[in-house]
Structure formats: structure tokens, C-alpha cells
Length: 277
Image 1 (tube, rainbow, N blue to C red):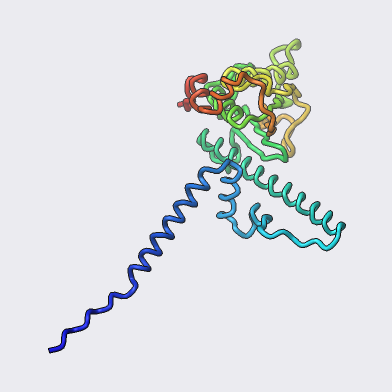
Image 2 (image 1 turned 120 degrees about the vertical axis):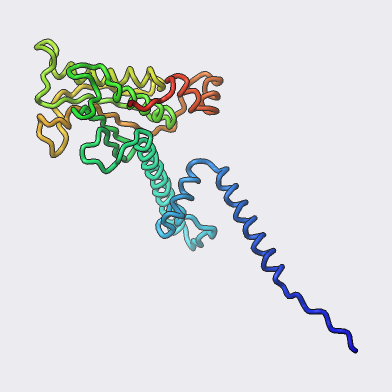
């Protein structure tokens, strides 16, 4: 009787090996991207959220062919413009991420109508408006003393400003119905003193006083658009946070410590950020 020929096992192992190599390559790419700087991480994240309209779409691995000098100049200008647009888009994505993180830190819903804090992304940074509402007051009535909620907000805000190296301008505002304590202490003094109270609080908790560029009191001269002059919403402190690439001239050892462990250093100076009851 003839010996039966051995069955051919096929190439199933090749498919399994190919899947394994694909998974290893994907793992390598994830680890490599995670090691990049913050701008690349933001751009990569945005690409996967909307691959058809991404800052990465402007990049290319092929250099365009230019037949003459004028075309070269136009191509260079166009490339520079695209690069500026790409960087601006990355910056705006970063600012939106910072604003969302701050809302989460304070456990606030961004869609509330009468929210105690409003954050707007501007062309060069953030505009943070802290409202002194009756339901959730920022200050003790007719004073510059922060409530427990106010202190918690200022702690959190100071940490965010220091972490991202914003430059700060602070404006104090009151409503038309706010007249101060006496004839010698009007809404002008109250708005200016509240702005200065915010400055002192930020410096106390975390930030370098050199990053503060201006502190101003406007009394009731600048009500919010669409609000009546005596509306409660006009009782507010507004902080304009501007991005800067300038590194403060600190002691090298202090700068190294801040870069190496920013969260630990700030929290130790603040005594920890604790949510009010």
C-alpha cells in the first residue's frame, strides 16, 4: 500500500506574522509620537479628529518645481503664509485645550447661561472673566476680600498661568448700581482695589509678579455688550492672558526645578488646590 502524502499546511502562519509586525509598527509609531514636543502632539491629535482640514495638510514631501525667479518668490511667500497659518491653527487648538482643562479643573459646565467664569479664545491668548454673582460671589459684598470660592478660583488660575507662561493684564469692573462704601471710596476705588486683590492673589499662589503687565479699575464705564449698566454681570474682574515665547530671567537652578516638576512645586507653594465644599 502506497504511503499517504503529507498534507500541505498552507501559509496561515504568514498572515499571523504579518499582523504581529503591523501591531509592532503601530506601537513604535505611538511611542515615537508620544516622545515629541507639545505642538506636534496637538497637531497629530487635530489631524485624527479632522483629517480633511488639518494643520498637517500644508506639509508635503515633494518640493515644487519653479521655472523662474518670480515663481520662486511667489512660492516662497505662499509657503511662509501657509506656515504662519499652520502655526496659528496649532496655537488656537492649544488655547482651546487650556480653556477646556480649566473648566474641568473647576468642575464647571461651559454651556451654563449664568456661569461664574467665562473664557474666550482671542488672537493672542485668553480672556478670562470672573463674575461676582450673588449665587456664587467672588468677593465678600462691598469689599476686596475673596470668598472661599474666589480663593479656589484664584489658586487654580494662578497654577494655569504659571504652567503655560502667560503674561497678564487685570481689569476691575463694577455695575452702575455699585457706589462703593462712601463718597471717598467710590466704584472707581472698588474696581481698582479688586483688580489689585486679584494681582496679589496670583502672585501669592504661584506666578512671578514680572509677568503682570497692567492693573486697571474701570468702575462702571465699560458694561458688557448687551447688558444693562446696572446688571449683575458687570460686577467682574477680567484677566487678559497673552502667550509669550520669552523665558523669564530666573536663576538657572530655579528654572530647571520649575521645568522639571512644575506641578509639584506649585502645589507645594499653594498648599494644594482644594475644591470648596
